[in-house]
Image 1 (cartoon, rainbow, N blue to C red):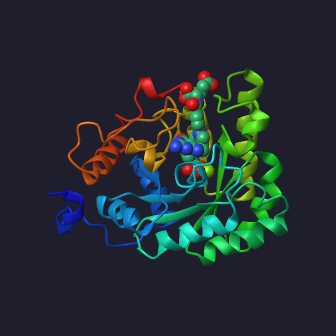
Image 2 (cartoon, rainbow, N blue to C red):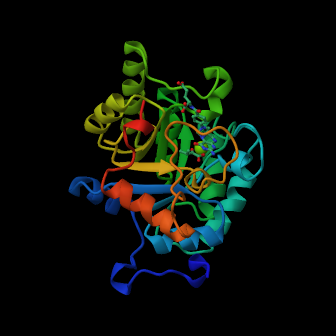
Length: 279
Ligand SMILES: Nc1nc(=O)c2c([nH]1)NC[C@@H]1CN(c3ccc(C(=O)N[C@@H](CCC(=O)O)C(=O)O)cc3)CN21
Ligand SMILES: CC(C)C(=O)C(=O)O
Ligand SMILES: [Mg+2]
């Protein structure tokens, strides 16, 4: 009696038929509707997430930890992300597909372009890269060549060894000013979106007010334009240490569809993230 195998489909009136575009996401922000994002790495879960109404899907380099069993995202290759992006893309979701450029794949604008092309040809509609103002020329180089960009600021897991662990960022006045300057530089270079990871909720709110690009939070408070979680964390199947921003939505739910729908509903009605998930 596994509901998710029966395809617990919502009524036809609720099923999204049009693909999600970047302008559609901007309209959602203008109307005050929160944007939902989850990571996903395969076709079956993509079909499930899409049927539940997820707005955007991230083929994250977190796959190195949750799929491959590494203790960081550093060993992930462009080919790994391309393989999973192709798997996600074959499910033909209406959700917008983003893919992470992995560690070491965007050291120069030319390298970033060559590698981003691999991900776009695998089915990505936007690529994400981690880092601040130093990436502005790369962002400009990619958007001029037709590749939409999502930035990633705050806790950037590809820099874990520089950060000295998976620690909250933006805790001093100087760090706050640096993150704001980085965000503005990346926006001016043409980024459409930015993931804000593990920063004080007050900073998530300030950045969202400051920026026209879409802010997607993970441990960045409830005031971002949208929220993202790693799928395995939401389902309670990741065996590692649980970050403060993680909520297991499977708890008390009869099946996976119900957990995904609960996450989407909680982001849309702003009940997730709660104060217990924020810094
Ligand atoms: N399963 C999974 N979920 C993730 O969110 C995730 C990955 N993997 N892999 C890549 C990175 C690593 N991430 C992490 C991992 C741990 C914390 C964490 O435990 N942070 C502490 C902060 C401690 C502090 O500075 O006070 C926490 O308590 O949340 C945060 C982000 C986020 N990403
Ligand atoms: C946690 C999200 C934002 C990510 O970058 C990933 O899953 O790799
Ligand atoms: Mg990532």
